[in-house]
Image 1 (cartoon, helix red, strand yellow):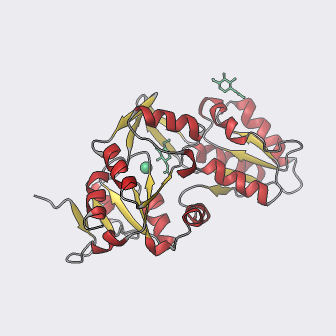
Image 2: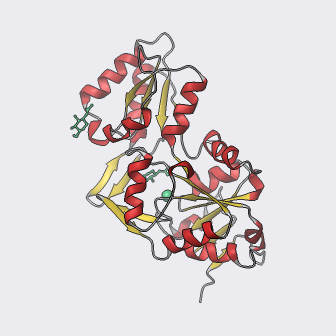
Image 3: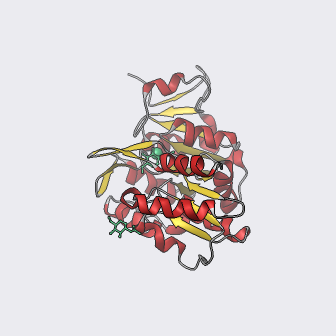
Length: 277
Ligand SMILES: *[C@@H]1O[C@H](CO)[C@@H](O)[C@H](O)[C@H]1NC(C)=O
Ligand SMILES: *[C@@H]1O[C@H](CO)[C@@H](O)[C@H](O)[C@H]1NC(C)=O
Ligand SMILES: [Mg+2]
């Protein structure tokens, strides 16, 4: 039988897992599999999250979700058995709002209608930058063209993108993701977007600052080798890949990114972390 937890280098142990002070969890593909109108919890993951939180290990969540406010997103997760507080969830929109405030920027938004409440209280008068997110059905020609007009009309066109995925899968098929539309605006205005979200170091850094921990004390657990594991490792965190969600066996032979450990699922990861903790 294959061992439930295997570390990358043959023979080396995953002892380090027992001494981590904090765990940062990716959500889609680790906690649940997405489906139209909600999703389904991955077996054992809700209990695993509960055990982890009860153990006193610091837990944060890191997602690239940009179609919903965090509140709405967490309501869906509650139905699946996860009890997570909004202040523990890091998603691109709040990280971007932090950047906008720091730099005195006023955005023109091209985002999903359901994400708009995250921007309550943000000054959007006479915009001096454009923000694009996964707007899905709100990516109409008219909305795209309006964002284009604002962007090209700026003295120094400034474009932010909430993620840069090419496409994703929902139950009714593949969907174009925000990166495609980001490229269109980049092309039209000859600019390069600043991407906010995984795998950017700035994004992971906001989570580390919130926990007030050093990167080596923290492990990121995700199903996406490049964005979760690779991104976290570049910040000095450990990166663990679960064999759920978008994981593919070929990830374990990737030429440039190697997880510090590969684990069957979140429940197995939590077992390894909590042994003798
Ligand atoms: C966004 O899409 C929804 C659903 O198709 C639509 O009702 C709404 O008017 C759109 N909003 C904008 C700003 O395009
Ligand atoms: C972002 O989220 C979508 C689901 O909304 C997922 O399919 C996609 O792979 C994610 N991209 C990254 C970079 O994590
Ligand atoms: Mg994921």
